[in-house]
Amino acid sequence: MPVPFEALIPLGLITGFFGVSGILFQKLKTSINEGQNKNEVLPKLVRTRICSLFAICGVRSYKRPPRYGLDRWDRVMLDRDYRLTGTQRGQAHQATAPSAFSTNSAWNLEKEHL
Image (tube, rainbow, N blue to C red):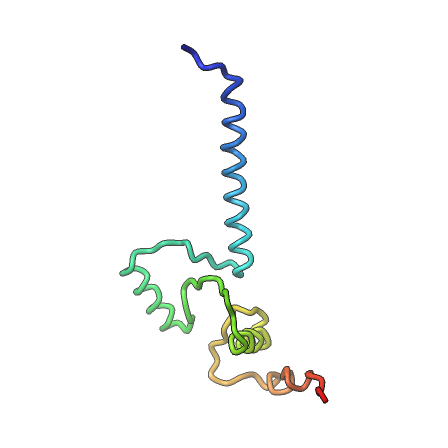
């Protein structure tokens, strides 16, 4: 018994929308995480060699997962990283902070609570 082609149109639309929504969700998740995608799977041997190679070059990590459940210390470190590098996930490789970092402290901007 033949299948009428009209029945395949909704199936194609539903499949297409699932595909488009999956791609858009992945792009949104990657953009929120500043372009880093944890779901890129590498074999363990390759991942350790890449990470050791990046450690030699001064890069901290290859891929980092998104951050959830941050406490106060983590937020302070995010703010420090933002003031040093301009992004919350970025990390500077210099051993000493730039001279401008000493004057842009968040403590100088905090209002006194009486």
